[in-house]
Image 1 (cartoon, rainbow, N blue to C red):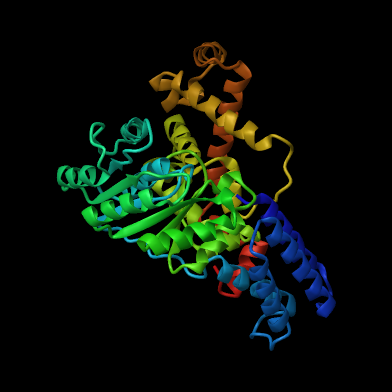
Image 2: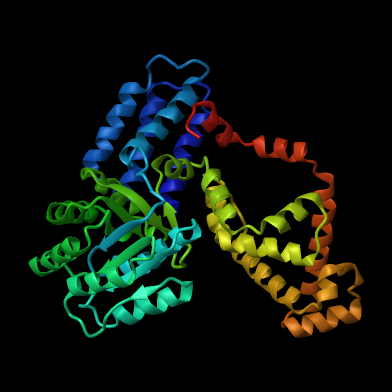
Length: 442
């Protein structure tokens, strides 16, 4: 996510941490680094200069208690970046509500509709989706297929061309559900026809939240879209999509601040689970290398098999528990996404190392599925002949099976040695993360 911007900002801050003395020359050098980084990410020039002036003005103010000049400067950069990226997060209410998604062609409304439904579904609510896009060919089929795939109730009417009529019928049909999410039509531009249609939908449903869906790759153009939609409809929040696929997202994330509507969600991939609540503080924390362990823990909690995790932590686990936790890791996200949330996206790893790890986890899952029930419960009984059979049945090599068995044994041995107190000490370690807590930004 915004790898170039992140790497560039980190380099500038790392140079500051290595200096023996922070003087005006060092501050100006840091400001130039930040300017280059933000402009390359398509952030508005005026916004960049305003941020630069604020850092310049505050850099040599009286130091807060307990902070060195270097630490204060990093804190200042963190706070100013947070301000231009939204300052405070939008409120995400977990309650019964009607949500309308609006946006132009190519913004990702339909896939975002499903991601949003999955988001509320995982949090114990009963969502459903309604297709109010009567303009785009195959819109009905696409939303229906995606809804069926994730197990979310769907409503649409292929024969009805009046979007407001579809919405009225859909609301009546789906009234037993908690969260009703409506996917509206888009156009190449916000023309009078689209405005009239969305206003008719708005009148028919009276949404609790009207979310403007904007793709990150349009950069500063997001400002014009946000202003136009807000003027025509009165949007209440924004979702920025395709954040994982562009270097211009800085422009989209900062441009939306010109309206009163805050960015509520971002999407960081194509899977139904690749939607995150947008928190400017956490986002900047990840951007400059502090990581976002809170988001990682929240996501892990959603997918973790708690019984298996408890067994794993005590060393009393079998191959079923071991593979269940591997599956949980895969659901959290790719290794790249996990390292990003841990503040390690800048770590220098061998080319293709992350892909190799992901492929290895897929292989191990197939291997365990090829084991008998007794072999999963007691991996110690797996002999050479069993290894051959398992490898053949899983489409892997004998070396792959042996590697899994070795990793299983090592993990079991290691977890028995790590007491809860030892784990707590390990969790408290960390450079930038510790600094972040020190100045109260965590």
